[in-house]
Image 1 (cartoon, rainbow, N blue to C red):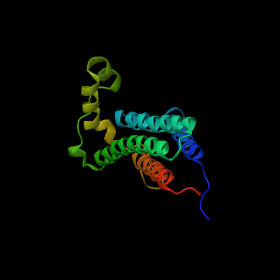
Image 2: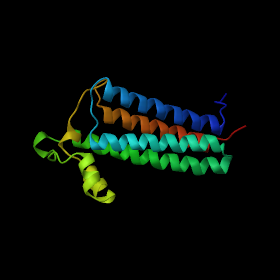
Image 3: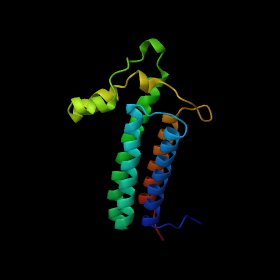
Image 4: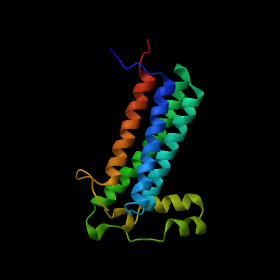
Length: 165
């Protein structure tokens, strides 16, 4: 007995999960006072990209071939977001003397440099990206974001690889 779900419903669940994740991120920022660092912002962009692609896929209501294309796009966006999460986890694991120095804020970088240079600087990380502002079940926020992306990727791959009866 398998899970009987359409492609539309499956992609809509991904979009809803992304909306929930963004809702929590905004709650953490505005109610818990956890200001996002540049890598956190990139992770949010990843969540929004996955959510937007999944919503478009749900609206399109693809058949088998279309679901694979949309699933590939959702998976690629999820992999990119997970990569940023893992990068931040790595920065957080560094000894204090090896953490990169804090640089200028993201707003200043966006106003002063071309987008490619900004992305390059942000992905290198800074001291503020290595700070830990709280834990849940012993793990930091980037860990849970990576788990979220992993869940979305596994769900999406299952959705497009299953045989529908």
